[in-house]
Length: 174
Image (cartoon, rainbow, N blue to C red; front, side, top):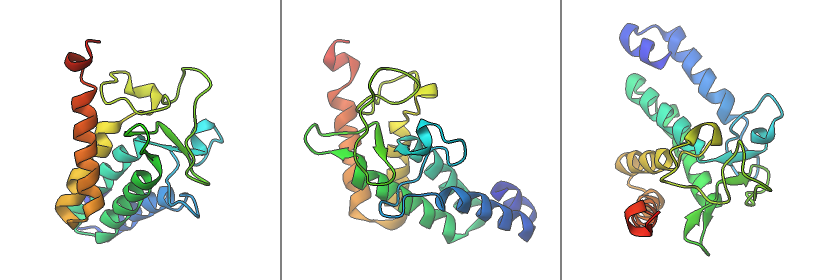
């Protein structure tokens, strides 16, 4: 809708794009600001936020470019900051794969499956169906730092770069 608005200037398309984005943003945790992966079906991913938030934030940032509507950037900014605040594990120096939307606590999976592991894996090639897109978060942080110059986004970019370097297959011999 945002792309079409950028091509046509049809205000109804911009309104629809904002309502679509606002629907997901409106389902974020009241106390955490975390955006759920899936707000409607009641599955496991309706209670957690994962690095899939980066994919969503990137879409909002593109919508902001197509429309010049600052609301898209503000939603991406808020959702990404919340993810960064709650998902970073200072003990391991990594980001948790899942955090509970209601309180931001890490969610440790009982077994491997259709969800992220305990920590995100920047070298994971099986991103879907695991909802693990850490480099999408890193790219969103880079774009948000460029737009806002806010230190938390630069800090996150530097963390993601360190995580990628330290866990690279060539370095770990995996």
